[in-house]
Image 1: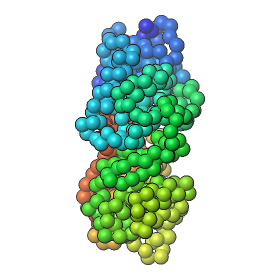
Image 2 (image 1 turned 180 degrees about the vertical axis):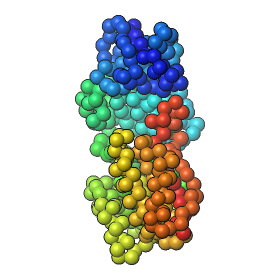
Image 3 (image 1 turned 90 degrees about the horizontal axis):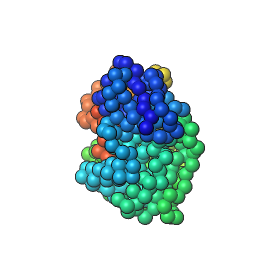
Length: 389
């Protein structure tokens, strides 16, 4: 087996359990290997640190699989996937959940989402993609789904030298999959929906809005397929407006509203949220509760400044049109905007909006998206529930 030598002074991150070894951290790779192979990782003093798969084309050159001298084979993946699934059965509703969360489940670059009896799989790095067929067989054996679908139509694979692709891995089924979350029904488009078709990481946060939407006039911004909006309707809101820039997402949200008998409570509009928030303010319209769940405004550290401006603007404009005593549920899924920065943005928005704000609750991602303490990248979702006075 080939081995990588970590540069002096760069070993500590690996020793503390961070799963990524960057190209700049490696002083040499000794021995022959093929990209995607598993290789050993050693310190500059030739001390064994662990074992991971290698791809010289990627800036993340090695993704650590184990810190033990154990064989990486089908049995290894079986144990890891079984452990991930047993964890979900303890902390989540296994009917629909994230069954495998990549590095947090010690299976770097592997995502598995479960929607009812259908699994959606992403293998986002060359090393894990080499084991895809074995992983599919193991998922089939452990979870026993009716079907498995591949959503590898993502640009990050190209950085690994992989092609984008999607399609059936097991079975031939209707890719419009009905699932239930917190008592609310959704049709999930596993073939063409964003990412794997539905954002499961907000499940517990959607349940948490219940006390703040009952008998309320609710605005759900960046509504996507209506997940927060429909929860608001389900929890007794008197009227809900969901806004999303995608006409396709709005059509899906309207379909989901009908599925739940909420079409007379929840309506949806295809529009730019920034423009609509200005429009509501200009015409003096207000809401009891506003939900902000935007897509990531930055995926790189270099773009944080622009993201901060975007987050501040939507929060400021939302605060200006919330009734006194009303509530703001505001989220960010940008990893590079950490909790402290996010709360600073909210405070500065409140100051400029001339509103007093109380933090009711601060939340993170659902338990089926666990955070690996050694890897700050696995903590990304922030959700603050605020009262505006």
